[in-house]
Amino acid sequence: MATADLSSPSTLLSPIRLSWLGNTVVWLVCALILGTATWFWALRECGGDLDQVPGATRDDVFNDNIAWHLAEGGGFRLGFSAWDWLVPYRRAGDGVDREWVFQARVDGPTTSRAPLFPVLLSGSYRLWGRRWDVVRVIQIGALTTGLATLLVWAGRQFGSRWLPIVGAATLAADSGVLGAAGQIMSEGTATLGMAAVLVAFAIATQRTSMARWGLAGVLTGLASLTQNTLAGWLALALPGLFSVVIVRMILRRPVGPLIRHATVYCLALAAVSAPWWMRNCRRTGALEPFGCASRIGMVGGYCDGCLEQGGNLYLPAVLEVERQMRKEPGFLELELPRREHRQGLESGRRAMDWAASHVAELPWLATMKGLTHLGLRNQTQPWVVLANAALVGGAIIGCWLARKNLGGWILLATVLSVLTTMLTWSDDGRLAIPIRPFWHIAAAVTVVEFWGWVGRARWNDRKAK
Image 1 (cartoon, helix red, strand yellow):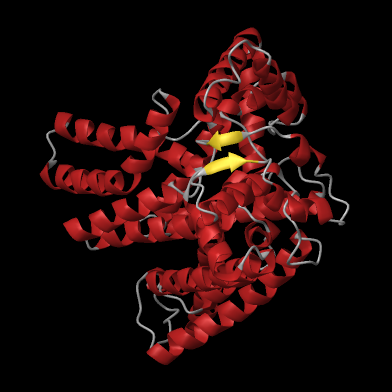
Image 2: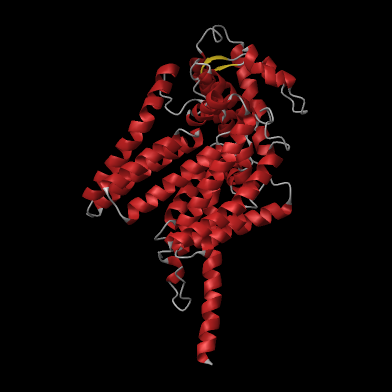
């Protein structure tokens, strides 16, 4: 294996080539660390039973329901009254309150969920039956493999065999990221999707070509189909991309290559995502390409309850809008996507009314949402806040040190994720899970560079003597 020369200040942040055996050894070490930790956190997340019936959150029940209908050939829809689907919930004896599942009256095609995770989940149901232990084991394996590969790749980019191991060690303590493997939710898939996107961007900017930007567009499209939150980032990122083009034109800088690459990227993204976006618009009868889930939840992000909860989504406000809408004449006769659209409009209206009457509280509310997103607020243990503060601080320094490499993209993705949360709502930091592995990578850059600086200082002292 190649060794880093600590006498050179730039060695730790320049690409190196490890032997095939060296890469394999580092990958195996990372996989062992992450696999053990992921198994532990996944078991903890599902109460020690990998085959636990969904119900710990509302989202896992919705994912299970959509996947079941897909596996049964019913299409991308919700339907809580199907007896065969309800059987495991009726038999569950783990103490989780699932009474709302039996009371829900939802039936029809839906736009409230991104499609990729339910589709993958339905594939598991078709192959192995409706076994959640199989799903969780697959997620543990996929998350371990994906994150270990990402760390080894980052180590090659930053020129350090130690960076992947440091990153794996800190990630092993991150229950939010690794615990996602124990949930029947999209966070694990979204984490892998975000990893693929940022790696593709880093490669495309280092060795630019039409094909690489096209691949980045395809991967961005797939990532946007894993979570509606990631799709929302596009609404912030794409105007920024066009702004860069305009600014360069005003400054009389060359824009030809930038326009060509941006066009290829956008076309590739649209080729993957546009069919789903058009489906949502057609179903709702309105311009709702990303679905209605975010709009429906807006009242939960702008209300007294959200303010009292430190920026976290206040679900009772969302459910209250749904109850009131169901009482309106003709509402229940509408197809489900159109009801979702109507409910989203009413939720947005109430959120705007609340914001207009609480202008003074908006900056503090947005700040609390951002801090919670970063893990610096709403944590039950003070040491968790301190650990997150160290992680975020180390990541910021690492992004600066590696600003010409992956660091710039990590910083951009973090800014987009924080802005999206500040404009909508937080969920105890859950929406930050897809980007958190990159904070660990950037923090590992800081640790490795600091250790290298200490080593260089000692080396110079020895030389001076």
